[in-house]
Amino acid sequence: MLTKRMFSALAGAAILAAATTGAAAQTVLRSTDIHPTDYPTVEAVRHISKLLEERTKGRIKINVFHSAQLGNEKDTIEQTRFGVIDLNRINMAPFNNLIPATNVPSLPFIFRSVEHMRKVMDGPIGDSILKEFEKHDLVGLAFYDSGSRSFYNSKRPINTPADMKGMKIRVQQSDMFVALVSALGANATPMAFGEVYSALQTGVIDGAENNWPSYESTKHFEVSKFYSLTEHSLSPEVLVMSKRSFDKLSKEDQEIMKAAAKESVAKMRELWDAREKASEAKVKAGGAVINAVEKQPFIDAMKPVYDRFVTDPALKDLVAKIQAVK
Ligand code: BDP
Image 1 (cartoon, protein in one colour):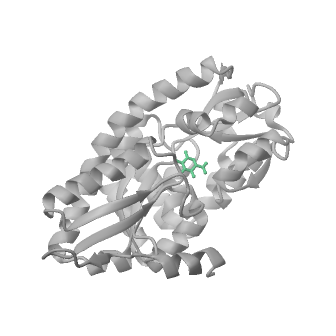
Image 2 (spheres, helix red, strand yellow; image 1 turned 180 degrees about the horizontal axis):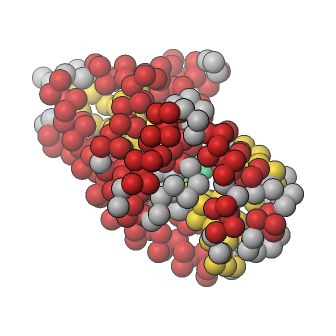
């Protein structure tokens, strides 16, 4: 659906703007991210821009819009498919309803560790998931880390699923995340990221779930101080490009873009690992109450989620392949 916001974005868009200053035309790609300017995902895309500028002698660069300047994730997906936005750094979860394969790396407890996740997403399984974006007018370029997501709330520490009974928990706009939270006995409320702080503050919701850096950068810890280490999902971030914008690049520039995106992963991880530690320290200093959680009861409660979202033979195969990666 074309929203009012999209029309105005279309009108004002400088998509692949070929500014004919000097001899060579310059392509300025518009990239979106909901995170603040110093967040590792934003820095990683700036790093790509730097590599592109170097490798194309300034012909291509990226204008990185951060802090949801171009809208919330669900809306920017549509805009990226239309080519209004050229690049989108976004979590896998908002793609879950559109692209079935993206549910798999978002599934609860699918990865045993961060190392397992990195190995899977960096290899042929990750590449096969990136390929799925092409059926939806997008080119999947790279996966970034998102740490692990845990529940936080304003009521009490969560030690067992029973502690979540009846709690109103915000989730991303993904049916799979709704099912995940429902399976734990809580009430899932899908909501845009930018609305969560005031919803927590006013008690519209009791809690949400996210990684250390997002819990910290949004200041959710100020209004939702119990952070319980369920670490239930490692749903990675993904960088996608509009197929329309990608097709406008020459074959050579497409290769430069793909390589730069892949190279930015190492840079992102370096920043991410440091940011996770810094964010953890910051929320603790800010009064967050952290508790460890015995995960098995949470893992056991996830059977209905797998039963509902992993029915297709291709997805079953994907799950089995991920589990088989040592
Ligand atoms: C963050 C992701 C971001 C998501 C956000 C959310 O980086 O892309 O949109 O969580 O929960 O960790 O909406």
